[in-house]
Length: 394
Ligand SMILES: Nc1ncnc2c1ncn2[C@@H]1O[C@H](COP(=O)(O)OP(=O)(O)O)[C@@H](O)[C@H]1O
Ligand SMILES: O=C(OP(=O)(O)O)[C@H](O)COP(=O)(O)O
Image 1 (cartoon, rainbow, N blue to C red):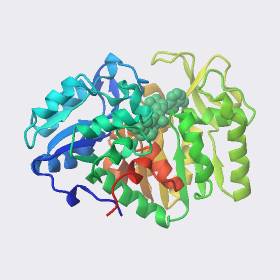
Image 2 (image 1 turned 30 degrees about the vertical axis):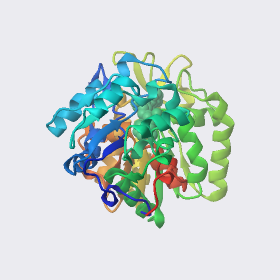
Image 3 (image 1 turned 120 degrees about the vertical axis):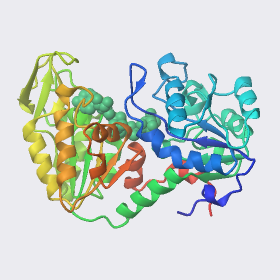
Image 4 (image 1 turned 30 degrees about the horizontal axis):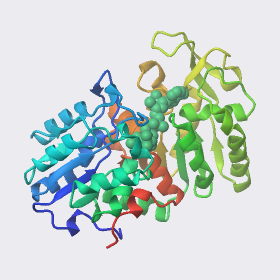
């Protein structure tokens, strides 16, 4: 990597503003998967052990510039303290007097965490004043938030223009592993795209079609394609505005000789709950007032076959609402196929996808679990990540 890292700067006695991605899944205020927190520990411990005063910053969810009580970082601070075995000071503000006082009370080695940066309207706008205010807290900026490195926000990009700015170990490791896999990808190369961030993910498909041999679509993303094929999708997740785009991607795939796979059967429910009525239907028969929440068994079998015939598989986004057991079979089936496929290099990307393979106890059977979903997809597309570009060159 041609960017400076925390190994390249003097840390002793310095205050460091370190952006991490602690955007972890929560259920009733409890963290259900702490992969992203654990992944940032090597950097945090290195900073602390080398005498830095550490100010951590992260987003959680998408609160849209407003304070949302359920998205405060208190459970994250608590889990981080437990993992580190030492207390972490947490502020209730993103910036302002409380943060300045807490920062000025830090001693070398101490660690504090400011409140969810997306509570501040300036964060997502990359507001120069907020970026400067973050920079004014510290001597050095460290970016270890690989999962948010595709966002040009105040704490991921703007702040880096004011003080020396370097990468943390997680960011460095992710760029190294993903860069190596993408440099000269082993073929057949298969990408599996699912999840719920339809707007974000549909955008990457265009460029991916120039790179992959097989493209598999699942999760909430699938229904815009199924609709584009002329079928009704009932109450399933759908991005009406992207139907034509979805159609054009399927045409592009055909022209380029890329095998494009969409579900052939799905699990539908008449309500978004565990005790809803549930059935498996072919995609031609999704009832108008039902919602498709998982891929069906025939689809799993087909996708597993494609996985087994591949050499490199990059998977981003669950195949269904895996958090509920009734809709977890598709995601589990794909995770098992990947875990058991011989000679296939597997890269899993994304907070929820990582949580899914953890939940099924298959994480150690994957070759690389990336903490970034959108970020890894944009890297694979060949894009420069703004959070990386803003760091100091070696
Ligand atoms: N068919 C579906 N309908 C609605 N939501 C879905 C569907 N399939 C998957 N999801 C949801 O997608 C979410 C993950 O999406 P996303 O954030 O895009 O993935 P990742 O974090 O891995 O990048 C999960 O919470 C899952 O419940
Ligand atoms: O969860 C994240 O992305 P991912 O779902 O693509 O892995 C990152 O924390 C970025 O979050 P964002 O997509 O709300 O900017």
